[in-house]
Length: 373
Image 1 (cartoon, helix red, strand yellow):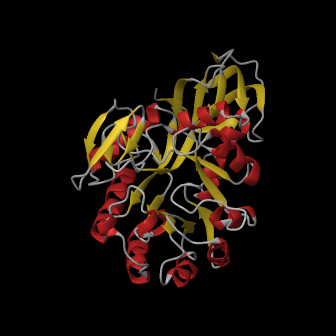
Image 2: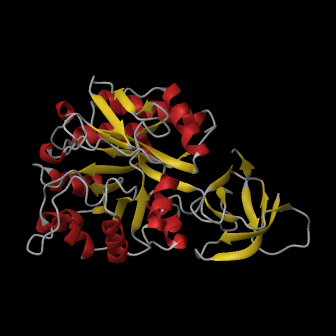
Image 3: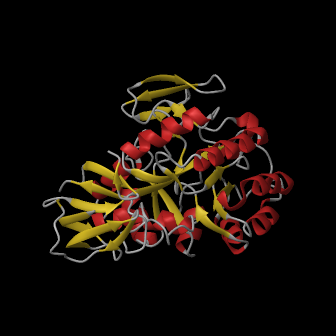
């Protein structure tokens, strides 16, 4: 397949007028050619976005996860531009975690019919009660290395991210040991600057949805944000306009730069659904109004926007388009250690890309060089 005359966001994350040649599922040339192809004049081509923190879509949630739900989620987000993702498990029982691993493995073994799996992300269960957000408190527990080892053994190389609150008893020992097997992310925590810095020195290298579910920044108590500024950790950002004010998105981008910001959706099952009331597995009601999902007490319960929509919002907020797409493609691929396969439009990588109009609206989605939408 040859695509001609588009503006392509190439591996250096600058738009260039060039052609794309795809053979055997991969990019084989990004040079102009005299051969005939598909004319995409006026279109933009960007890497497929990679969502490394999301919990559901289209009415299907990781709460009470099933193989059928994974197909529903994977199909929905692929249609919305997410070509790879991490179906993110959140604080539940160990039994649920092990079932989740089996379901994801089965989906991969069946050929990943829809969006690809970038790896497994565990958001909890080792979080601080006071910063639990939308998590069910009955499943919150202290760090348990034996439980982690059982999960890690079952997940194998699929295990990519484990989130933890550094202020829990035993957290530092846990971080030191668990970071040998996966990325450790600081999350849902009341820890201060010094404790966050200690966690990073012990092996934490990632911040879960920066600003959210943590103590705020103060000039005398910079907390997690200050520790992120003073180190080189990767920082997630939910740039949907609900979780963060546009100024906070701009601040975080300027603070950590284009190489450390990771745009995520933190989406839940209301993505793609109308406003309404949606029960979860534990009988709680999630209220969705104007694309904002909350519990009965007003706590935000997750995102209602696709990752591409979050990128579009980041651009509207003032993040340069080329860099916003980098933060939602190459950077998450780097976190998941799959940047040699996906995450940018470069020769030798899988041809996962999006065709957009000049306003960054989605026209079509390609996975492995095949148009799926």
